[in-house]
Length: 453
Ligand SMILES: Nc1nc2c(ncn2[C@@H]2O[C@H](COP(=O)(O)OP(=O)(O)OP(=O)(O)O)[C@@H](O)[C@H]2O)c(=O)[nH]1
Ligand SMILES: [Mg+2]
Image (cartoon, rainbow, N blue to C red; front, side, top):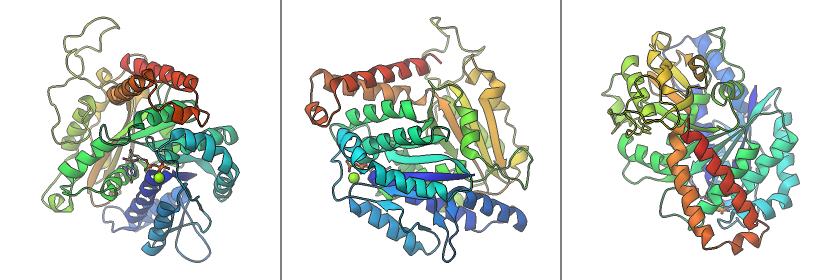
């Protein structure tokens, strides 16, 4: 089954490019751990998902590029073409002359309806080129104007027109400080709208990705490109092929569907995050060896202590000893910031992945009590290595990890809203105070639901 990717705004397009490049590099890079035959099946599986063949030339990404200004789209198209390895479709990009100026309302209410037909036609053309559609992957930031506002509009349209197809939005969470003043307004409007029309929101926080670049990758002057490569690597480590239930050399046909089934058991809980291990510079990798036991022990502790990387993990955090306490009762370890999960999907790639001991992730104490732990944990595997790592693990979690950042954003937006700051810039384009109030209500409910897991 194929996935159609929709890249929106500056951020969505820049990340989208790195994702396709990472998928392609991994699929066609050197590979020693599996047989030639198995490697070919892996490549074919990746291609079916993310690329299509044209009669002449290199594979074409199953993607649509949308921005309201031409610069990033043109750069992205030409970078892919210049790679000489893969490219975007000839008429897969849509741009205009002027962006949304970080105004969500402009993206949603002006650009959206004005360009609805053109954008939806492009998407439909790409869908028609899939033998079988597995769903949509929609990449955007939540703090700007186009990716966030127009992205929310397009997602709603996809929900109307392709209601039986899955939609997963990949969202970049803005830096906590130092960006545009209205980022919290844009963020709450994006999240609340996507909560109504998307099946899952897969989030990367810029602050966390920045730290990974600094601490794990040892990059001194960190650019968006560096950060996007980290994000792309993490996404690739989840979405590259893994064995189906039949086992090797058969690969999973419907990754998006399986992922949703494993991770989103209830529509109130659709916030997902990724952690992976190891992730390091080429130089450090040359001096490192890994065991599955060591990798999984670290990854588990990253999950329960809500660390985004292995460096600086708090080893004091433990799950409650005999299950978590009933609501309202205090736990002995309550002061510790234990990150409870609703569901986890572990993806193992590389040497002897089939032999790894997964007991630590099956521990019922990690999970909410209302879901059977057997259903809350799933694992995907392949013995084919991912990129340059002989062994690697990624964990996609539906957990409490966003409670704090979400609560912060809602709080900051609410404070600004209470003093009516900048509201006129939104009402001017048809987003009323009522819409803000609806967004606050919805997101406060999401925070409360996750907090009570
Ligand atoms: N990780 C990452 N974040 C980005 C990138 N580009 C922009 N951002 C973040 O995205 C937010 C701004 O959104 P943009 O995507 O630039 O905005 P846009 O969708 O183009 O919308 P307008 O420019 O307002 O029309 C900020 O939070 C930036 O930190 C990128 O390439 N990578
Ligand atoms: Mg822009």
